[in-house]
Image 1 (cartoon, rainbow over the protein chains, first blue to last red):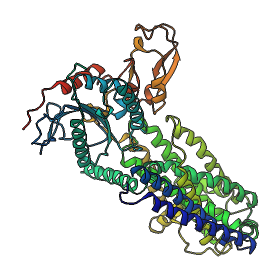
Image 2 (tube, helix red, strand yellow; image 1 turned 30 degrees about the vertical axis):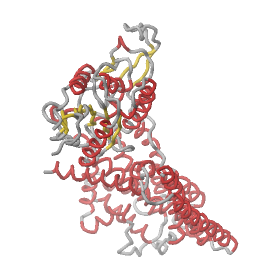
Image 3 (tube, rainbow over the protein chains, first blue to last red; image 1 turned 90 degrees about the horizontal axis):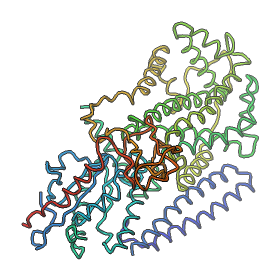
Image 4 (cartoon, one colour; image 1 turned 30 degrees about the horizontal axis):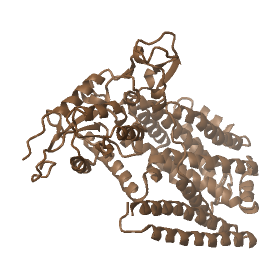
Length: 68
Length: 146
Length: 391
């Protein structure tokens, strides 16, 4: 599907998103602790959206590895 | 249009039978009066109402009657007008390939391609690629004496 | 002329599929799951709706305050309200993409008419449920919308006044109005599930849920939007001081925007015409058998003497059009001699696709106008034709 790009790059990108997801978890905890419910919910929303991207990236990495 | 085969090749273009779903590639003007495909005198197209209509027995019959290859063209996967026709066909072809392997027939002689209504150029290119692939398979079919 | 436009729309729809397939993957393509996405949003609506219902007070004095309490006093209440609000928008978007995609790719014809008709009824019910939702908040906009609704109902000749009185529960807005509106919000929403049964009944293994990627993404987007753009009410409704303009939420309130340019009676008539045309669409196609060609090969027929009762066609039929019934007499062929079951085609469900023919290894099913032996003939002719001379 995407010649010339290695599976490693996708995995790297997924890793970045997962780390950013950890940041979101931190923001959720902060939101709960500081009663900033909106901040916590926005962070939850971001987390879910990033995880959906991670699912796609895992698949892309898988396909790229299969092509090699 | 050019023919499918390389003009310098010494072997004749292989006989290929193709089943074309009526909802997939728009076949208007694509089929000559004798059932062959425009630009591919060696490819006979059989129009079917859905790729899922094709019996695996027919694919087998085409090979047994002397065709070098046989393919089925359906709509893009996930987009079958009848919802599941091309997935079902994919499964059936997988089964048939395993059976052919046991009979010492190269399973690559059976193809499944998927092109949408708008994608006629893609279909022509896909058929060309399939014909070239089949031409490369040895040994050539014995012409009904398999 | 219209046919060319139609082909262009169809081709554009399919090209959008291909484009997304290139970016994503076939099993992640949201355009293949538009119905499932609508179902996802509907589920969010029902769950958040139940939670909101627990706090809502359907009275003229208490409605606005109860919604404000939910928004400001309840932990994460504003998020739940936002989820309900934005899931409703997502629901409408998914429904319309579903509608246009299936319309442009011919998926409403012939045996699929029941899906189309049930879809139109579903659309009307969802639109109505969404519309009454805007009245329940009971802010200035709600009041204006109620008075516009009453005005529109009164403009209906014969029985319009009666309808308006029924809607309000009296000659004017009174204590029974909001309970009525609440019922008109929840009852159509519950009816959607009965209608969905009708929508699915003909389909084997309908895809009612989108892939995990899209569940995650849509839920995330809903949470994110409800946090960034919290759903709010306008000023509390003050009877007697109705404002003249309101913020239009286009997905549900377009009929009211229509009333800005059209007299209420004509706006209602236009909506009626649109719905009637929608219901007529599947029957608008008139084609001769020659024009239908391979799309009308006649309904699958069971060759009873060959049927072995193996159920393969039953499992493959995508339209639930084949039933297995007990067989009372053996078939004629050797394989069918000991059969216990017999396949029967439910004719109103058969779309003449021929998938069951491909499934049957016993030559027990045929499409009347494209017989097995004719196909075999074509195959033999194609496979045995002399090879064209190599140039």
